[in-house]
Image (cartoon, rainbow, N blue to C red):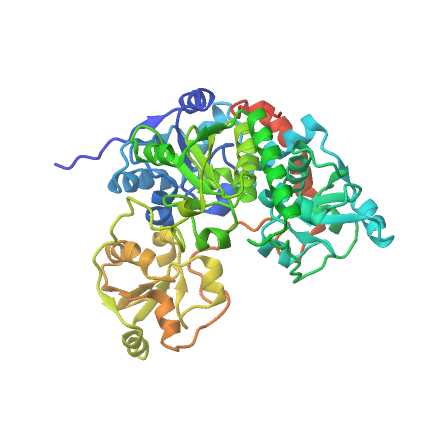
Length: 539
C-alpha cells in the first residue's frame, strides 16, 4: 500500500499575521515570471519551479525558514513543496487555496514586478512631496544651457539602452557619495531620473535627506514621461561618474567624509542598527534567524575585493528589488561598504521599508580580502547522476534521425543562440512541452552550463520512457568547440513566460502601455492602504 504525504498548509490570515508581527516568512510564487507579474501578493517572491534548485539556496539560506508556496491552480505548488523538502527545507507549507484563496479571503493582489520598492517610492513622494520637474521644463533648461545636471540613477545597462540626452549615469546608491564631484557649485540644479518614477524619487529624496545644498528634483515620470512628451532619447551613451582614485585630493577626501557624516545621520534618523564584522559573521552562523549580508558597492568594486560572506547587491537596486535579493520578510539584513556613505543611505531606505537592517562599522582595507564573484551558496543540491555526451558525440547523433535536443535555458538566451534543431522547453511545463515535440528515439538535454539540464533529465526520462543524455558542459561547450548556433524563436515547445517584459524596456515602446504603467504607479499608495501589511514609514 502506498501513502501520499499530506501537505502542510497555511491560511491567508496566518500569513498576514506573520507579516504584521514581523515574523520570518518567505511567500514564494513558483509560477514563471510572466504570470507572477500579472497577479501576486505584495511581498511574494518569484522562484519558478523550473529553476528552484538553482535559485532557492542563494536567497533562502536557512533550511528551517518558514516558506509558503503558491500557484494559481496549475498544480505547481505541491510539486515545489516536495522539491523544497527534497532539498532539506523543513518549514515548507502550501498557501490554502493558492492565489484564488488569497483573493477570496480579501487579500490585495498586485501586478508588475518589484512592487514593494515601487510602492514605497510612491509613498515617499506622497509623504515628503519630493520635488519633480516635468520633461518639457527640463528640456527648456537644457536648451538654454542652464546650470543643470541630469543624473540617471539606473544600472549602467539600462542607461545605455536609452537615456535623457546629456545625462550622466550614477546608480542610486552612488548619488550622495558622488554629488560633490558632479555638482560642486551649490547653485547647480540637480535632476534625477529613472525609467519610471521610483528611482528618480528615491534618488532625489536621498540627496535632500543628506542635506545637499543644491536645488534637487526628480524628473517627473522618468524616461517614460520624457517619451510621452515627444522628446527624443539617446541610445548607447557611456557617460558615467568618475570614481575618485586613491590619490584624490584633500577637497575630494573632505567631501567624502562630509557625505559619510550626512549619510550616517540619515541612517540614525531612520533607526538603522550598527554592528561589527565579527558580530555579523556570528549572526550569519546562527540557525535561528535568516541573515542576509550585502555589499552595496558596484559589482566591479565587489569583485576587486569584498568582505568574505557578503554578496553583491548595489544599493539602488537592493532598494528597488528587495524581494528579489531578500525574499524572507522579517529577516535580518546587514550592509557593508568601504566609504561610510552607500551602506548608510541604502540602510536608511530599507529601515523605512520595515526591514531590520544593520550597517557594519569599523571595516578597513584588509577586511575586503576576498576577490572575484561570490562563492556558491550553501545547501545547493547535488544534481542527479546522468548519462553525458560530448559536443562531438552530439554532432554524430544529429546526423541520423530520432534525436531530439531540449534546451532548458532561459528563453532570452535560447533566442540569442542555440544548438541548431534544438527545442526550447520550460522544465516546470515539461509534460505540456512534450506534446509539441516530434517523435524521438532518444533525447538530449542541455542548457547554458548543463546544470539545470541535469535536474531535468530524470524527469524527461520518466515522462517519455526513452533514453536521455545530457550535453556535457551544456551549450557553452558546443560554442567552445567552434560549432554553429541557430538564432531566433525557431522551435518553442513552451511559451516564453519565464521573462516578463516591462513596458519601458527596450526602445519599441507602446505609448498606451507607458501611460498604463504610470497609472499603475499612481495607484500604488491606495493599494498599500488596502493591503495593510507593509509597515512602511517615511522619515
